[in-house]
Length: 204
Image 1 (spheres, rainbow, N blue to C red):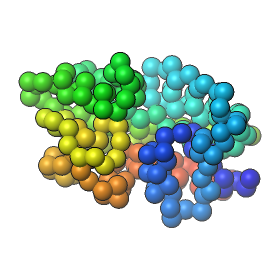
Image 2: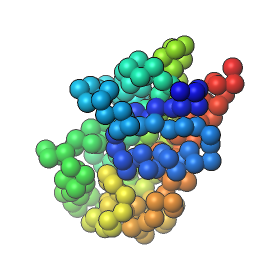
Image 3: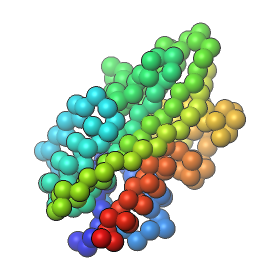
């Protein structure tokens, strides 16, 4: 593979779709974990860090060392001010069931009667090159509020309960088209920074 082949350390196809959109005007050749089913079928990446940065680095380094490719790995989370930043790094497994719906319904229940409904998404992207041991991290955040009830069927994760500031808190992410969100969301911000870091690094 050439040095423009980049492994994105995710098997989440919804996230992969967003990332492909972010990279569409670049000449990077993106690969994802689901492109290598044999290599990753028995690999368990233990995301046991207490920070987004820590988890992103774990995923990037483990995947990079296995595949011998430059890797980008993100750890993203949903942080609610009234819940002291929860679910945070536990966003993907916040509920007992661990499904998207169970996770956001738990938030709705915990926020019942709460007036201050501010929240934000965080995305940290780790960049790792196993050949040189180059490593870096970049960040992106996105401010919003918690809806009173879930609405919409587009997107994934906490989208049905997130009201973005840019849309005057009128529609949830799950009511908006994918293209409307990627230019302003946390993942778009973080991965665009990562692209700049990569381009500078590969020039050297």
